[in-house]
Amino acid sequence: METYKRIIADRVVNNEINNNRTLEKIDESIQYAWNNWDADIVSTYYTGEKPELPTPEFIENWVDNTDFEADGYDVEYLKEQFS
Image 1 (cartoon, rainbow, N blue to C red):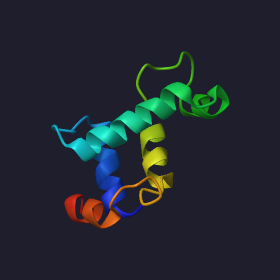
Image 2: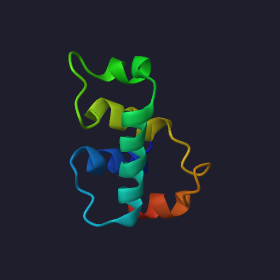
Image 3: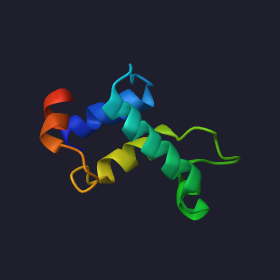
């Protein structure tokens, strides 16, 4: 995982968003995915009853597989801010 993506994932996993609008937007997208993606996909990230919040593994995989540029983020800004 690229360094900036690792830092983003770590901050979201640890809830270290600190009123950062970019991290808030990413966190909202992750929560949306957790709540709305097909259960067959999401259920691979937990056992038993589905947790209310995304698991660290789900967050890390979501961040690692997201094409931030295609999603409208300024990747250079992300790399500067989170590297």
